[in-house]
Length: 539
Image 1 (tube, rainbow, N blue to C red):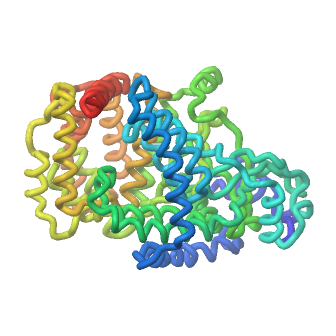
Image 2 (image 1 turned 90 degrees about the vertical axis):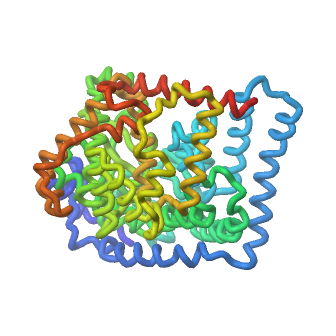
Image 3 (image 1 turned 30 degrees about the horizontal axis):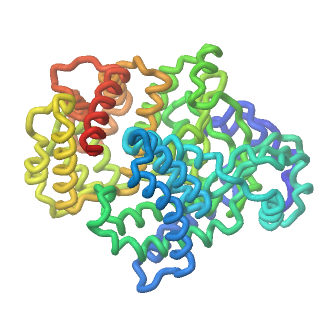
């Protein structure tokens, strides 16, 4: 592969007419002339077809890899277990911190598949222990890098030319190193500053081997692990495989970048910008893209000093994320602090498109109904929509679910319950959901995971934002912008829809009379609930 000619990299705003790119582009993208874009749909289909093969339970797993996983994890857990048994921790927080550290180091030794699992967990603030989330955040971009000689070899194998033939400069120290790949800052021979994403040399084989180990192990864990929650272990493995297999081909990722950029542009979401992938320097294992600059997403002080309205950043993020999912069925599927930053002009740059949610056909219609029914307090409609999304079997008795989960009953404020009552309620709900065969479909999992991230982002960027008022305003905005279209697609009279946030309030654990709640208020409630549950479990 030859480096691009000067004519193909001439800065031009022409592609800004159809995609959310920076107006000072270093090259222009012409869709019909991009070879990797033409192959991406077939590659995506191939990846999806491979998932059932990789996750089919076999009689025997890859023995050597299975032994290695058990050995590494066992060595991580045993010292913690002995310390806990001999009461050498001052409190439960110290115990969790020690175990989290050992688990993170073990996961880094096991490699890409387990690092990716850790990254998913790191996005679950509020769902997993804070110590575990904080430790696993280091797996986002602080993973031990591969040696530069291996980086060079991958690039030269993929381009068919020496590294120096393609790049005028290439920083040997990675800008970030994560599970599947690491990124380096470089300069093309034609002068453009770029970021080069380079896949780890053996990651493709290792991920597939690990998925076969997990697929063999999963059936033996059915009913044995409490954290399997709303999906049995085999379903969890399948869900994980669906999210990671597409990440192994960067041509799919580059195509995802263009799809999201087009959606944002069509939605007139000017608060977001996507880095341009290079028209020719994209292959299965390397992805060259435009370099953008900005503040880290948790650098609140830096943003405010630059005059950036952090509440506006959050508001734009919530609207754009929901619009992409509802209107076009396409959304970034892996939001976390390492995948986005805020530019000096207040726009948010999105990075890392290995995982993108895609809702099509009946699934998208079910998702629309779920969102509509949530804002109109239609409990039956919400459960039916979850069923049609694949979260419940199609023959599920909807009324029985509502009755068993007390969804139609008056809201019980969880802060009024004791630790024992809280734990019992969680166990009751989980048992009932498992009894109905509930699971978490990929698209819904990605959406929920992103909402969890936005929840944590509000805590840092806009803690005094009135959540109920904001949700009401967003609902009104959607009705104004898209009401006619959504009504037509759903076969309803959009002018007759009345917003009723009682379901949303119930999700926060407050009754219908509550009219205002900042994130600070919500966090205080959560901390009290978590404290009571920890105290009860720790007895």
